[in-house]
Amino acid sequence: MSLKCGIVGLPNVGKSTLFNALTNSSKAQAANFPFCTIDPNVGVVPVPDYRLKNLAKISKSKKIINTTISFVDIAGLVKGASKGEGLGNKFLSHIREVDAIIHMIRCFDSDDIQNVNPTVDPVRDLEIIETEMMLADLESIQKRLEKNNKKNVDEEQLNILESALDYINNDKDISILKTQYDKRQINQSGLLSLKPKIFVCNVDEKGIQDGNDYTSVFIKKFGQENTLIVSADIENQINEIDEKEKKNYMEMIGLKETGLNTLIQKGYKILDLDTFFTSGPEETRAWTIQKNCSAPRAAGEIHTDFEKGFIRAETVSYTDFIENGGWVNSKTNGKMRLEGKDYTVKDGDVLNFRFNT
Image (cartoon, rainbow, N blue to C red):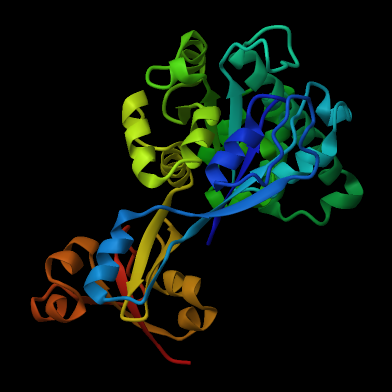
């Protein structure tokens, strides 16, 4: 599975600049006028994982294949988007297609970059976007609960939609529904307000290390757990220099990790994702799975036939694989286990599947 994150926010908050930095490209046009992005840009990038190189060295693999993450640069929304203002509902529909939402929030002052609002206020800006998504959900729910459409909605989804309607109409915290229904049911609902969210506070160079007054106010309101402080402009500059200069520059400005790394870590955490590996002479490869994934379902990530014909999984933890120098010594030293259909794959497991075709 590949994680797909949509970057949303008001116009001119730095979405396209962040997209270019994350995808190390100039695919997304970044310019100083509202609605510069019309059609969503999509970039697929490898997920950095230091463990791949270590595994490949031991297995003498010919190639390394990272798992991937997709970023979607979605056009800026404005107040009234759910009613067609700005570029309207077209772009709200693009958000429905992603697994997680990256809220890009302006947390910097600039006379050179236009602001659709007269002041910089990250709390207000996020609330505008959240309100528009909630209004879009309200319209969607009402249509799906109409008599002619209701017969096409199963009982599980009917309960979620009716509960969501009650929460929205009574100004209650709709996110509570995520504790009342399982993730599969929530995902099937397609409600924008229930998608996992990461908040990216876009700062200037002075705010990189400790943030600024704007980020402090934002974090006080929305918390630290799903919030990142990033300078999209600085991230873009970092991608334009070679690896040696990049390291020196990051040390000079006090940046320990790139925005891509920290964003992926947050994304994996809020979406409850893990990584397992396959490793041999031909290739060492990373695979993304949901936490608490069964061994047969993990096998199905490689090929559906692996899941259907699953027999067992030869399993070694990443640490044991490295310490024992690969498959042979791991088996000899009793570190390789044979796991069946009930086994829950752990993050970092190195797996070799046995199956019938």
